[in-house]
Image (cartoon, rainbow, N blue to C red; front, side):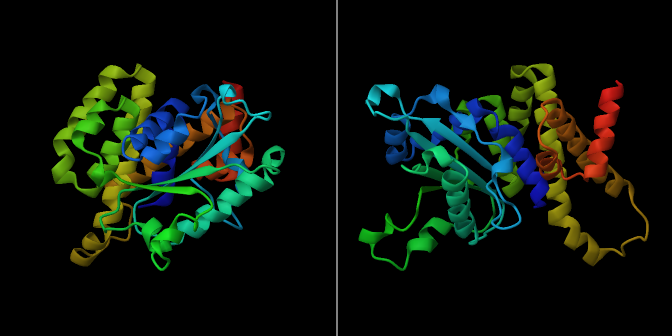
Amino acid sequence: MNKKLHDSFCRGVLSHVPTFLELVHYLTTIDNELKNVVDLLDENSFVRIPGDYSNTETIGYADLAFLAKLKNSLGSPVQLSVGFLLEHKSYPDDGVMTQLRKYNYHLMFEHMAENAGKGIPSIAIILYNGREIWNPLTNEVAAYPKELQKFMLPFKGMMLDVEDVSDDAVEQFGPRLAALICSLKYARDPDANRATFSHIVDRVHTELPKEEALDILRQMDVYLRGWIFDNFKEAFEMDFIRPNYRTIADADIEEGMNRQAMETARKMLAKNKPMEEIIEFSGLTEVRVREIQAEMQKS
């Protein structure tokens, strides 16, 4: 899957803190150790850490990062925090563990200097919807005795394969999280998830305000168009001679991607986000972002 498409989709949905918290609460139902951690947190303190904390040239980056403070009632003389990292993968990538280790260090220690003395315990979540069976957490520590495996990672690692999220669970999610998880499940197995997908689209229409619903539906559309293109491109090229001109399908896909990229840039410009972050999230060039900025200033 085109990285910009799935990153944009996951970020667009899960950067909404209440939706990310909803995902975390779902994970607590399948991992009691995480539940014990979440019970210590002041959930009103959850904040997303902006993407410009990452150094994409040297270490890569996590799709999303958050910080949450522990409850004041715990009696600590200093304010303590817990970090959350999230990576989405649509294919096996065992390099994700090195990526998360470096990002965890870079973000939690180098850039959060006020916490460097005491450190920040972290949770790293891998959201996966590839077709192959894959779990880098178990692969990473398999060579060590069971007694030592919990000591191997600098964070608590969690793997959520969307295949393991039941339709009943998806129905319990709010419409934003349901739209994301159902789309990822659909991309993995369209036939098995067609009915649920149709129902979730109806929920998005009816349960979200009009503009928010249209935004989510647009992101779903762009994501799945890209998925179709990636998955069937090779078959098309084998069976047909590729024309030496842009087809209607090419133009349709490019238009959808460009429309989503420009909408992302407009929203981030309106919030005065740094130019580097806008370029990273939208995939547009700096020249195009500045053109959009000029258009917004005229209107």
